Amino acid sequence: MQLRDKIYKGKTIGILSGGGDTPAINSSIEKIRNRALILGFKVYGIRQGWKGLLGEGDIVDLSNQPYNGVYGGTALFSSRTNPFPTTGNPENRIPQIIANLKRYKIDVLITIGGDDTNGSAKRLYEQEGVPVIGFPKTIDNDLKTKTLHTYKGKDIEAVLCPGFPSAAFRVSEMTRHLRSTNESHRRVMVLEVMGRDAGWLTGSAVFGGAELALIPEYEMTKERKEHFFETVKQRYHEKKNLIIAVSEGVRWWDDASGQLSMVYASSETDEYGHKRFGGVSGIIASEISNRLNIPARSQVSGYYPRSGFCCEYDRQLTSALADRVLDLLIRQDYGKMPVMNKIFPVEQLEEYNTTSVDMGSIGNQPLQKIYFDEKSFVFTDAYIDFLANILGLPYVPSFGYAFKKVNPDEL
View 1 (cartoon, helix red, strand yellow):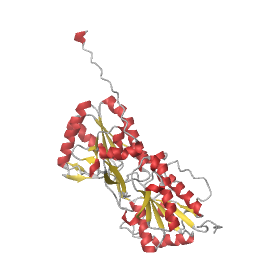
View 2 (spheres, rainbow, N blue to C red):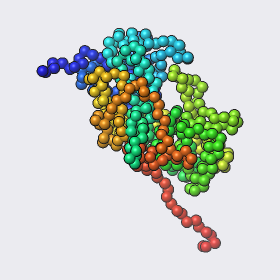
View 3 (cartoon, rainbow, N blue to C red):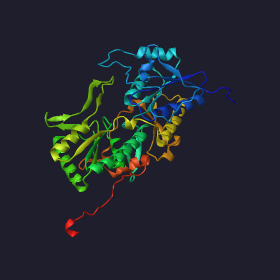
View 4 (cartoon, rainbow, N blue to C red):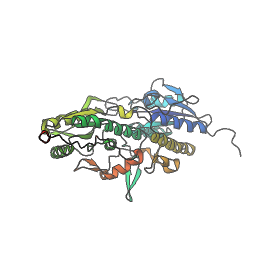
C-alpha cells in the first residue's frame, strides 16, 4: 500500500539549544531539521533555550530556508534559563512552557544541551508527559554517553559529545602555537582550559605539546602541590621550557587560608547554581615564579575552543546522531538521547554504530583513572589512544637545534 503523505505531515517539532555554545550546535540543528523534514514534520526553532518558551514565546520557522551548519555556535541563541524552581529563582515556569507548546502546536521537543538542559527536558517528559528527545552537547565532554573505548582488549567507559572534537582540535592547535613563544623565552607556560568537573578537554593540550597537566578529578592538596612543584622543577631543567595544561575547575591548595579552593571569575551563579570559573592558571604561574624562581606566564584559552567553525569529525558525528534521532522519532521512543556506542575514527561515524540512552541516567562522567597518571601529572597512553581516534596522532613542533657554543679560548 502506498502512503500518499509523509507519516508525520501536520505535526511540528521544536528544537532548542541551552547552556554554553559549541562549534557543533548549528550542525546538530541542521542535521536534525533535515531528517525531521523527511518525515513530514514542520520544524520550529525555539530561541534562547528554555527562555524562548516563556511569556509570549520566541519561535521561528526553520522548515524551508537555508541553515548554515558549518559555522559554529547556535543561530537559535542560548541561555542558562532553568524552567524549574531553584533557590535563586523560586518561580515555577512549567505552566508557561506547557502553554506555549500548546499555543505553537509543538508535538515533539528536541533539546540540544548538557546535563542541565537535557535533565530539565527529562523532568518535563516524566512529570508533564511532553514528548522529548535529548541531543548531547558539551565541549567539556563530561556527559555520560556510555560510549566505550577499546584499549588493549579492554573496554573503558569514555564519552563522546558533539562540540568536543572541534574544541579539542582548537586546544591542541593553541598549545602548538604557544610553543614558539614559550621556547623563545625559556618559560613555563600555564595554559588554562575549560572544564568545570572533568579533564577530558584539558588532555587535548597534550596533542599540541603540553607535558604536564592538572585536572579537577585530582585535588591539589598541600602534599600533592609540593610534589607538583618538584616535578615542574625537574621537567623544566631538562629542556628549559615547559607547557602545563590546567583545567579551570582544579581545586588548588591555598597556603594563606590553609584549605583547598577554587578560583572564580565571578561570584554570581547561573540558574543551575554554577559559578563562572577563571584565573587558576595565573595563581599557579605566579607561585611557580615565586617559589622556583623560574619565569612563568599564564594563558587562558577562554572561549576560543568553543568558537569558530565545526570540524569534519563533529559534522559526521552530528549526522550519525541525527540519523538515530530519525529512528527515535519514527518509533516515538521519547525520553532518550542518541549516542555513539564506541569511539571510532571519522569514517566509522555512522548510524549503525549509534544507540540511545535514557535521558534520566546521563549525569556527568569524570575522566577515567586509566587516562591520567596522578603521580607524574601526565595523561597516559590510553588517553592518547582515545583522542587519536578524533585528532590523529599528536604533533609537537620544536626548534630542534643543538647549537655548539663558541669558546673564545679556542679561536
